[in-house]
Amino acid sequence: MNRLAFIFAATVAVASSTPSAFADTVTTTTVERTVGGTDVLLPAGNTYVAVNPTGSIIGTYDYTSRTINGTPLPLGAYVIEKTSGRVYATTDANGNLVAYTTAPSVLPEHFIVRNGVLFFLGSDYSARRAQLEAQINADFASGHLSNNNVKDLREKLQEIQSLEMKSRGDGTFKSSTAHEIERKFARLQSDYSEDIAEINEKRSKIGIQNN
Image: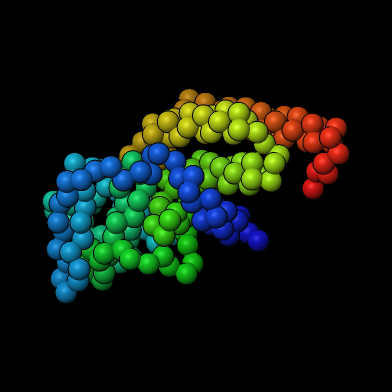
């Protein structure tokens, strides 16, 4: 199973643990009418970005002019709420928004599905977080992590997620921010390995096999 397939399968399996950053809390909406299509509801007051079909950020989407820096969206682009990563629409050949309803059979590298909703992981860091979160949930379910272990690891994941919010408009990071994210990933991975080893040792002492 390749990396994308693992992330996709694992995150769908643990969809109930979706991070709070993905929660839908906005109630006001702006209506974007498409030609011959369904009205697309975009929560007002949010920042939206456009992402091409391969998963690369194109730029900030202006839903007033329906353009990116005055240019219509290309065919198949995704319109995404920047903070949550939720996909609201795709585009047709004329640059019109088309309500997003079903996940494609093949996902670009940075997309996952949670509770039937498509989300965009804005960077390789987000993809790594999703993979680690899935592994942590799986190890907890199989008894290889304690409640306290999971709570601590999730707090570290949230710290990384907070740093990811400091990305530039094009999705890149300053070198200092990238260095800090990498440092926190390394610390998280080290703590994770130590937690697993500690729990496995306790299991062995009471005669439980570690598979």
